[in-house]
Length: 246
Image (tube, rainbow, N blue to C red; front, side, top):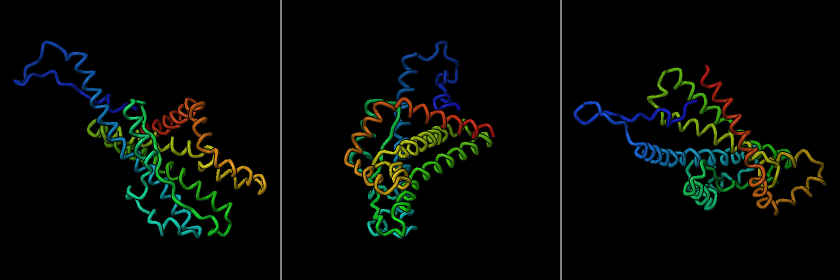
């Protein structure tokens, strides 16, 4: 798929409508593209925030359907960003990645509280609640791809290139959120799913890894990020290829 920057056109016309004898300076072009890239990354932030908030709200709604209304009583079943803001995951990390020009933005929202003792089958239902988050991100990625298909079929891809860029980012970030959260390391969602599949005694020992979870997660990111990123890009490419070939 062509990126947003493929659609940027620089006029070579003077103010009186005549043609310029000289092409724009490479430094001018580079500066304009850098400015537009920065502006687009700022526009990426609402897409990121919306995606992580939907992820957490999905956990809360799944828990509510299974008998736990903790998130409801705490006002977390809302798309209003306020109750979901995590100082590190929602503000500091995205800001750090933006300032350091990391090339991508990612973050997380404040986890929705869940009380598994309100479930009929605590282990199995807790796993279902865990799966709801990544599934919501997969749904958002598919929805974004469908909207790209509509733009492409209607011939409006170039006219709405900014929207196309945001939708492409939405596909990427939601696939990344889904895959990353499925890593079976506490407190990521994948650990809840794996714990439900283990024998009770083994699951108890496994769940005790929770205190080491953040440290292990950082190690996983440091060691396997290129591998994770490759998987995400491959899936994103496949989705976009299908979306734009219809």
